[in-house]
Length: 518
Image (tube, rainbow, N blue to C red; front, side, top):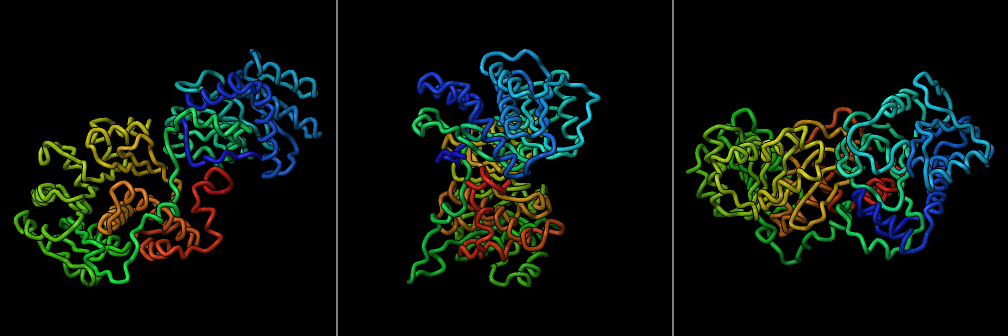
């Protein structure tokens, strides 16, 4: 299998179509040749992963994606593998029609789709809809997808799971739940955020032997982050250095009943290497902070006035963990904004910001915003459903509205800065959906900014450290019962690259397009 050398870059469907056009029209590679390469790649991966099936059932629509499926069927028949094509259309044209003819010449049985069809053995190949699909599913495609999902059999998707939007990662109605997706030419950004990771399975990229220079002609829309590349941007520890050279991070938060959030954020700042960390919080939480982590300077504040003189020392502020929505909360946020320091804004700081009253004319050029989908919806004045329907668009809109670096949390966390390329975190685990994870993340980013990382780098590195630390915990202890503070010991291991060899693939974003990283 041939992989191109730019596996970390992601494209929208329109850009992939342009790459395909350049290959055919300008490079003179016949479309049917690309189709044969695609079919061969799918069958090879299928056999390598699932072995030779007792029956191969290939679901085909009408376009080029169906053509790839017919090629898979023809190649399987040539290997004496029992194979059948389930057709949802008999109107194939162009290269797809030629591919169907190959299948017929190989004596492949082509059956019209029937909702009462029963498939109870072998492997299923999804070639129903390609990357050109968007909008509503037409009858009987939804029924066919439901049949595939209900079969309980291994499923391999050709180029993209049918029903998944390749640009947004959204599933409007239903999508094929693939165990593996073999995608062609370039990876589509929708695989890696929103519902994409949940339906795509393991993602395998095959460039179909396209010349590398083709990829220089079409700009990518997103890029996968690489933890180990980002670690190279950590400031070096000077032999004659001292704590003030490694910065002072201050966490502001911890309203009554929410002290734990601020405490965890402060611990994360310290754990990633900030020279000094302080916590400005309700007096009731000072004792808990000192018991939990005596290295942190815990400062009791009962008003914005008490906070103001404390803002002369820090080099970065982390505002929002456990902040609440009270008048106390608003006073602290007002004073923090007025200080003009770099800030990481999370949780209720974002909710107060969204109201537009406490901070009426925000200039976020020195800010990092870390919303989840609900907070992003409030900041944009839209619904959560609208955010989730196109997370890539939402994170860009937030960046443009506030001029900040924006990190949109969730499956396939996205980061948008002044660079037009949106960054995608390929690490993480479903076990992270638990209280306190966002507080740890904001603290990590604040601690990295304190040490001298620029806002963009600190956000990218912090996100990857956070998600990779969770992966290490899950690898060692399982998914159930993961809590946010479990990540803290793993941060030190990652920062010092003390990661076991068998975790290297899981921590390499290129592997997200290869074997078992998704």
